[in-house]
Image (tube, one colour):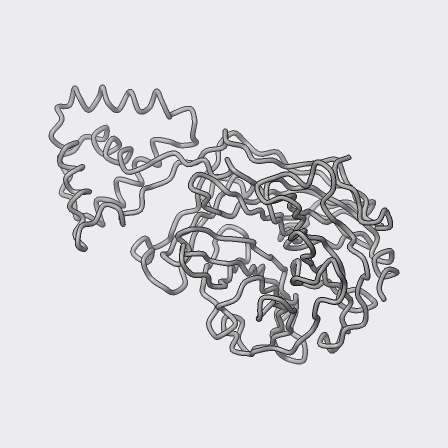
Length: 436
């Protein structure tokens, strides 16, 4: 067993399952048109279309057969993707291709697509929530959705998902993935350069476990990082799945929201207000005192409690909730996902950074009615990287973006040195007994 629990005193049980980077998983993606523009005019793109239009039908057939031979079996509905890509290009570039054969249109579409290895470098920083569909579950078991940060070519981060079933004894199973993965599709491609909300849709014939959400807007260009999902209960009793994540442009960061009711259609929207300029915000699963509540690290070191009347606007500077107290968290502390309501109060997983920039996980307990009141926290980490798990893209790191409550058990997926994902389980009472 590679991970050793801190001081051998933690109640966490490390499970055997590990998820690793997989360079064989590729997805068929369109080129974004930014690289094809010159001073706002798509000159390069139009020249490429003109070159393909100048080929004879025999050349078109030969070139297209070569593309299909090379890539047809590596992707799902490959030729339909080429069809769709051509139609998008025809609309955006105002192509007059009424005389083009189907093969020529598909060849044009192929030239404006590419393969992308979305999880070649790392899988890390998972979050986990109850699945919208709990039909057919036996008592004590729950279907779940887990999100992961996948890092691929160019160190670009995207969001991927795995579905599975967790049991009351702390065990779980992941649903299998197929050979094919598909990217979600932007509902209105003209909005890719806008700064507001966008809607993306999962392919209706693809499972969630085989779907990837890539960066769409300019602010997201260099990655969607560390999604913290929560099943949020609205005042009318309905549920919406809301995730906070960091959108990284390559030069700036911004907190954004992922919102969905069914994991088929997703709204990606900026967090407005001063708090949106920070990383690591996590939403409580319900309103408290009539307000939306989040926990976040507003100054880069300490944890704060924030309130808002609007889900997508956070102007509150927040109340100081926790400061680093113990040596393993002297550099900084942060949340590890949304708090979980227990009979004793809100259970919040935290991370601390200590000497040599070593990360560790801890827990805190907040008052159920007034979460600005800290009831207790763990003196020692409950999980820290040891032995082989200290090695990875970023060494000495364990990190999670959310845990799942199943009865009196918690299932805890966690990132290992920014390279892989492990799993642990524990009883809630055993964690509460560590609080001081």
